[in-house]
Length: 218
Image (tube, rainbow, N blue to C red; front, side, top):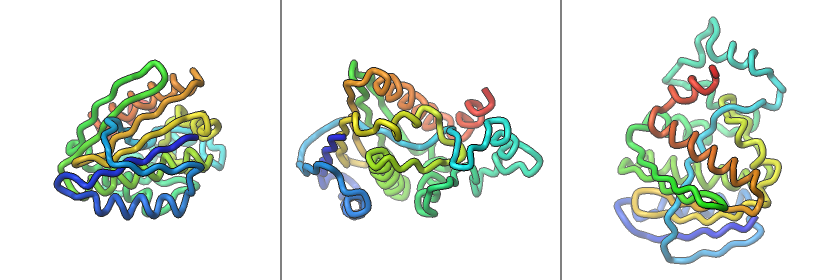
């Protein structure tokens, strides 16, 4: 994977927190290539998850029962247990909880390219901004490291990213009130997955956890 991170200290939040996130991100997941520029990219991807088979190889029926069954855990909009995973940290789960609780504060634009996606995600809320930047950079780092978080409600669309993430080129820019990401690939299966996941993420930004519940029931 070829990764470019572009930082620009502009806007309400001055991206000071984002700089700390980037520093932690690089330390935890050293990239094959690093380039830091001041400039403009215009894209982002909110890598909130949808649904895949986790490390315990739970079947879809079993997981749906766990989320929507007698304990009602899947509908707990406060703790959101479905955002936990076999390979997630407490901080990562907390970031996703913030993004889902504050989905009405997030705006997102997506352009599908012939070879990938061009998106931008923004928010005027500082806490949501912090969670957004940390989540996006962290999940992209996981893709490059083939380090699947195995979130309970994670989308099966993400499977191919964690298997062949080295074939995705990524550019990230922390912009005013948000984050911009472009991801491209010469692998048409990955391109199709990028388009599909971008649409899934946009649906979650529009409708929050309801979008996840509906997708899991289909």
